[in-house]
Amino acid sequence: MQQITAPELAAWLADEKRTRPFLLDVRENWEYDTCHIEGATLMPMQTIPARIDDLDEEAEIVCICHHGARSLQVAAFLERHGFGKVTNLTGGVHAWALQVDESMPKY
Image (cartoon, rainbow, N blue to C red; front, side):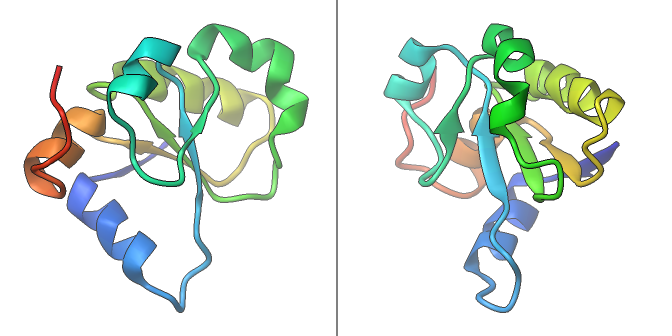
């Protein structure tokens, strides 16, 4: 299981030479509405099994949640189901708010 820090993800997103990853936000609707990383797609954790076919197995996917625990579980689930390019955002949006975008609301 690959892990990525918030500053590493920010650098990846800023690098025009790299393919942009699919940002999979697995939090609940109210959490996403409170704050999210620009370009992230909301798919709450409990919906993943039913919506797994909506995801591209070949895509680079970065799983995101509040602190990194739920997204780690989703990333492991995706790996077990044949997704080979899955990364977990260590520290989640909380780390992003502290290390990358201090204007992002914290909760």
